Image 1: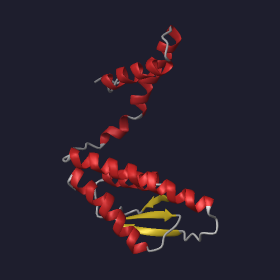
Image 2: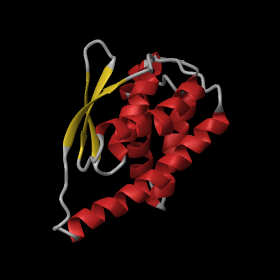
Image 3: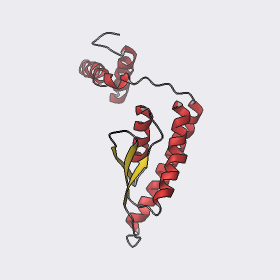
Image 4: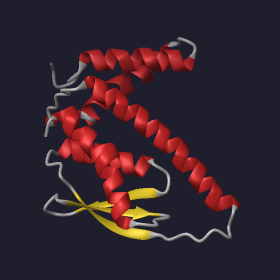
Length: 162
């Protein structure tokens, strides 16, 4: 690993994907692709400071599938809110208590919540024990917290064993 190419295989992969996306090969595209393939790993090098081991890859696949289903269902719910304006919405700011301690699973949980339409992870407390979530339509705060713990956080604890 050199200072210019901290991840040579990633750089090669990025260059190949770049050329495939351009659907042509020219000197200019190769040079621009090489610049991007060098710059992106250099820019994202700090993200590799957090070593991570996935202990249960099968649970990770299930997590991904659950997330996809939840995104589709949430999109339908948001569409109903937009198309049926008479429906009352109940926005809420929720302080979600975290059981996770590792930074990477907490980040994945926050991104998962943000990916699901109608919810946004707003802030992580300084002590790292609470995640502030804005939800567009919440009937029961405790039920939402229980759902997040059951559907996402429990699986993340299994995947990363934390």
